[in-house]
Image 1 (cartoon, rainbow, N blue to C red):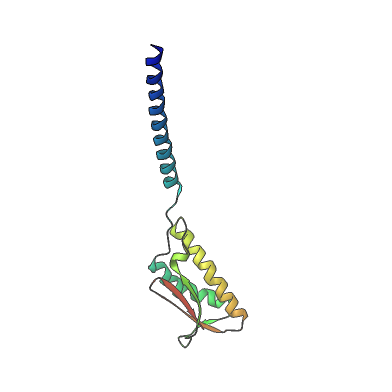
Image 2 (cartoon, rainbow, N blue to C red; image 1 turned 180 degrees about the vertical axis):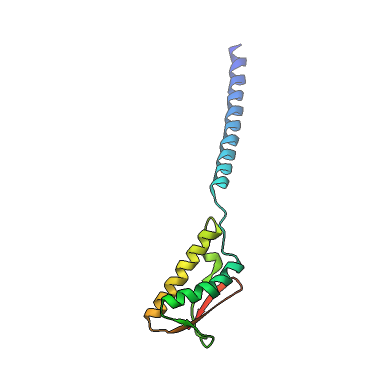
Length: 126
């Protein structure tokens, strides 16, 4: 009887190990998927707001004004590069990057700039 019970317990152990492996790998996969936040970017609507109202404010703080005569690209911001957990956080990241660019351009002596948004990219021209 010992011979019969050994293979049975051995196969039960093997089946238990396989079941345990399946559960572990499933659990890990589900945990990994659940922990990865989906990045959110700034919508086109908010990007246009940044390119207009907010850009004017940033330029003013940098000693610059808006001018449609500005045509030389000085900085570009691809919206998908500023992704965070929420759109507000993404907006803040993009705002900070744009503000830093305007501060730098103002420090370099530029007195005017223009900002436009198209095709998921916000452009600054001097």
